[in-house]
Every structure is written in structure tokens, then in C-alpha cells.
Length: 146
Image (cartoon, helix red, strand yellow):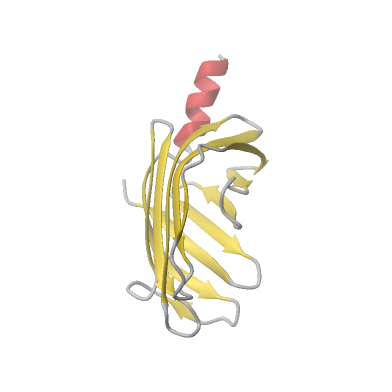
């Protein structure tokens, strides 16, 4: 029974996702190609790439690959690779440490909310949609493509 629960919980995020819109804190809506993203959650492996522009118009990028496990109450993630270019002109930062962290999951009906271990955002998955929120900065809207 516990195994089938774990599989059902993993299915909440499994698939390929695309960023369809970003809403900035001032209410401005940004659509691809100004902000783009692709994410894949498959068999416990997650890959994420998001690109955009800073308020000054400089490009930035986040790429992340990790292993993940979901339980009814916890998101556990082991980082394999994280590359972040903040658009400042400084070299990108790299993380290949293999760090592992767990964060609690909150569930409300069909909605699952958690803070991914290696990002400063809050994720909220519900059906074929997902949001990533950085308070005071943006909300990213994602949709499952398969």
C-alpha cells in the first residue's frame, strides 16, 4: 500500500512542463520569449532550465539537475548540478556538491505546495498546472505538455 501511495504522489509532478507566463510583482505579464523555461520530472530525476532578463535587460539563467523523492509529507532532493548566472556580468556559480535536503509538503485538496530544496521559490502543483513564486518578484506559470 505504501508503495502505491509513493507512486501516486510522484505522478503529481511527473512529466514535461513548459513555462507559459511570468507575472512580475508590479503586475506586468511576461511571456516567452522574454522568459522561457522547461522542466522534466521523470523516474526520480528532475531537470530545470529557466532563462529571462533582469530589470536592467541583462540575460540570466538557472539550470538544475537533481534526484527527488516525494512522500505524503516531504520533498527530498539531492543536487547533481546547479548553474546560475544572475545577469550581473560576474561568472556563473556552479554547485556540484551532491547536497541533499528535505522540505515539508503541504496538501490542500488536490494542491501540493513545497519549497524546493535548492531554489528560493515556493512550488504549487495542481493537476496539469504548477506555479513557482518568489514573493515580491514574480510568479511563474507552468503547464504540463506530456
